[in-house]
Picture 1 (cartoon, rainbow, N blue to C red):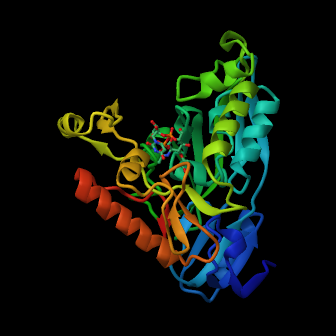
Picture 2 (picture 1 turned 30 degrees about the vertical axis):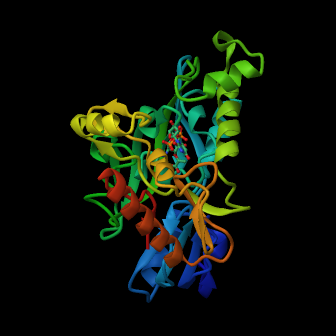
Picture 3 (picture 1 turned 90 degrees about the vertical axis):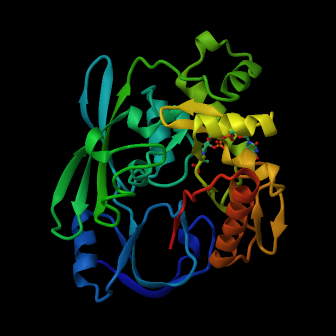
Length: 338
Ligand code: EPU
């Protein structure tokens, strides 16, 4: 039987380290125990937590929190070129990346050290250093929370976008992601166009033509660790905001005024680094009470130890307003605000 605990602190279960209470809490390690937890709970509402790395609790949770610990990495098929893996959603994302890098299965090494679980990865189509999950994604199984039936979603039905999927939009709150199937390359080609990756590799005396996926993974880990605070030391949830996409016209107009502005054109307009906008508004490294924007990456809001979720949220609203007033750009949070 699934053990349900009552009135416990969620502090160990969210990377912001916020000390909020949940009325009920159950950790599940199979689909059967998950269904049982929901069916037997008298609570009216429930929510799932994976790694707790993309959530800001602004108040206590009056319901059942289900911690997903459903694990397993299985080979579905394999040939000389590719390996297809089915991974259960409670598996740690970084553990999966390490499992694949050790075996020289390429495709997700640029996504090293991203916190959270495999189930959260398609939810927001995780991405970093020029690669997004959708590049290797084949399909996922998700439990419909009304009918308790398992449905399969392919790449199209997931409707992936930048930090987006159907599970954050039309189907929000309606499905639990149970497993994710990905296809990796056994003769991998590395992807090192983004940012400082090439520099970090060559600084180690490795020729780019010789670099392995392990070298790329090591470089990404080194860059991330130098910029992003370790949640065990300083509570945070990675990028707090999404990078806004603005029109080409708006970008050109801003360029006149702010020649230093950076922009990356895409199919929808020009993506502007939110970190740059926040830094220009003077928030980088600024502490307000127990919260603030991180000194090495302005996009990351941190908890200096005793912040409340609401305090972090107020800080976020202040930053949103400040960027709006200065640049006329509306920032949107990337984290889920509860
Ligand atoms: N920048 C600043 N000020 C800063 C930090 C960065 O001006 O304080 C500028 C940099 O000069 C750079 C640009 O902003 O030109 C982009 O910076 P960075 O490469 O650090 O990436 P980002 O756009 O800030 C995104 C993701 C990260 C991901 C990195 C690397 C989003 C919301 N964030 O950040 O993802 O690791 O790219 O690919 O897309 C996360 O989602 O939690 C996350 C950490």
